[in-house]
Image (cartoon, rainbow, N blue to C red; front, side, top):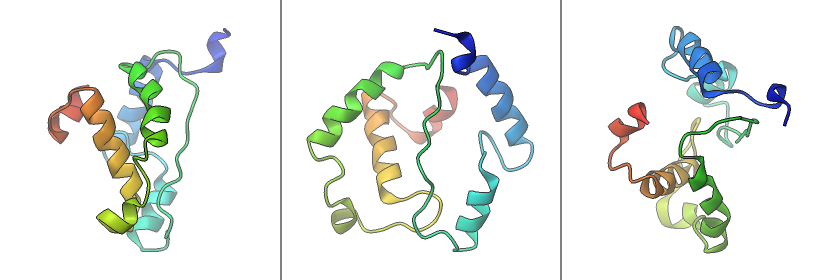
Amino acid sequence: MDPNDGSTKSARDIIDVSAAESLGTACTRVEERIQAALGEQEKGASIEFESCLDVPKGGVLCALPALLSNGLLNDIEHHLGKLTGYYQTFHILLLLAFMGLCRIKNAEQLQTT
């Protein structure tokens, strides 16, 4: 594997720190965030995967196909309601599912993992 094919955790930390200077920790994609804040973005943020060489606790990503095939996101807006803004209902539900798989008990612990 070519080392230029993905980022490392150290490189991502540098990007997150520079983003924190303007909007907050790890806040990138400023244009989309501003559009969502102004109510101009109906579909929420698009999900973008990037190539990475090291992902802490990345093994939980292997559970994503199983969660989806078992219906994790089926009719979620019907049952949980629809969120508008940068994050949609499925973003929040996936975050909670990954928190459970990583045994993260509250949102404050996300800052240290």
